[in-house]
Image (cartoon, rainbow, N blue to C red):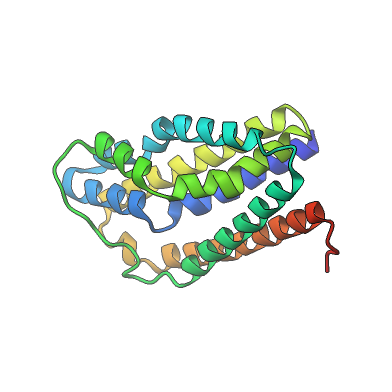
Length: 210
């Protein structure tokens, strides 16, 4: 049971880090909030709950065919580590102008769904990070992958909803140093998970771990 809750914590950290990080969906959440109010920002924030059902299902089917091939999984883990390092560096380099506001007409949910489908971020995450974690969690307990997914999406969507709420109430929120420091702090969390993925990849390749 304790091992299962480790995956819950991993999902929480990764979901929160992804939720507050600058990107197309975050920019659209803020844009819709500024133009039409917090409710429209909420609609963009929940769009991953709709799009990711298809995205994750397809990716997991592909990864299932590779699960027995340790070399392939090893390289996926190492690719995931590189992606996490990239996200960590991006988080550390975030500044006050790290979010570009885009404009457009209403239809927030539709725009959020389209933005998430066309964004490379969910595909990269579930191919290189989320998918391998789910397979590892299955080896621990049936509850572990459920807790990982719950923690990830509750904090991914919840953090974006909270930002939409804060932006709707105070438009100076994006300039707030606490927000910037939180994003930069999550950069170090990405680096920690990158080290874990590197260790897993090297183990699967049979290489010594320093």
